[in-house]
Length: 554
Image (tube, rainbow, N blue to C red; front, side):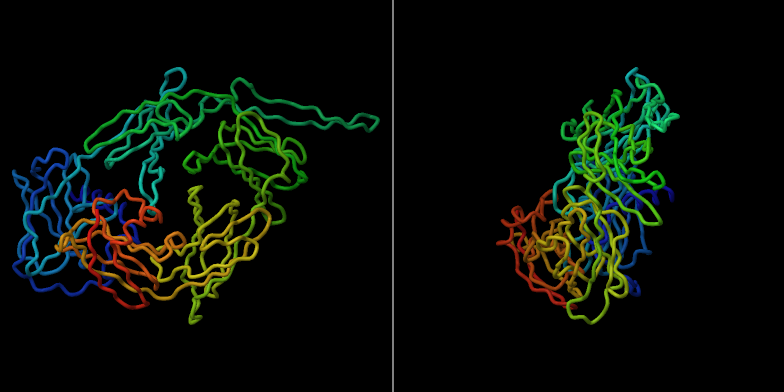
């Protein structure tokens, strides 16, 4: 039972993000004196509505995470906790065959039960969703099981307030070619498979230099291996397509168990021949990834070798959109050049045509200059390519990314759990628009970042028809949402309609409360715009608290 409980807690913690979860005090206060308050309700199947017996329900004070108690539901699914002190409580439940869940859970959010005088905490309806799963078998062109293939689970979700298809998990197939993804929430999923043919041989090409007695030099090409066995399996999606955009969606409801079998078909491996001025004494190698239609990068097991001075061959490549990074290392210094190539046949390129990787460095300072931001971590985020790079700021306010950042447009944000946000941004060597910087090729970028200092708090109550409403999504929208993604805050209203938005950076905002909106693209200005009129405008200052009453919108 203890092991099951630990597994359930681990599952719940997967959904708890540091920015969005309810705030808890870092130091637990002394326990209040027990009083005669009560929390009771019924655990039911979210699909059928039937009462669930023998479900274990857990209750934990929100500010005292080490004082949990539990009860088991009786035959009619009812549970009760007696003699409770006033405060907020986290309610969760689990039962074999169901997902462990928090009360009214929506991803990392849930509704806490607020206990106190004149508060309704009885007759709660706790819906448990039956667990869902996707499983299947991966076979090769001879209908033989493919072991150790990587089955990849993608899910359509709302991430950072935008709809996206997110790479959720990976598992390896067993010796029967079987895979399984269990404990899945209802939603829309896709399955992809990455594997290598067990019999594949990589054909290599080399040039042999020969000099005759007269001093005349010639080069002779040699090929090693069997070309008919130089094959790869393209990344394949259910059902039998090579493009995520064309994959068949698997829609899971609570309790569903779906099968998705995938058959792999080999195709001739492709190669890229790179010509450069590099001498044979330099260390040159390639980094290759495949870009899926949603921007996700999948590593490619490519073979690279110098076939002659200044000529590098990259083999074992699948067809599709590839990103190739050519890393050149000499005398302890390295440089990376990038190229995006749509592969349908062998390609020959010149290294001078590849885009050199620029360096990104700069200075960060607080707007009042009172202290150095040594604990700040910055993030460069390219949403179009699903890429993110973290940069640590030193005690002197200096930073430099030690690595190769591909050219592109990146939003500059402050890492999570920070009492700071980007207030202003300027750059040399890169074009700035708002808080986004365009990192080009061949030119180093130096950033000048001004940070806000200190945070405030926005709390209040969400009301519908004048009465507190629980379980609704509350969003704090910055004055210029298109330039300030990191300033958004979210919460879910508790049983008394209350919400708390912590670590709010100083500025002007609008608070909106929206019912049944957990799939809303809340960070898209055009989407959130229609709710702003029904929201409440607030101005937040450092170390200040703002209380507001917000009407719930549909």
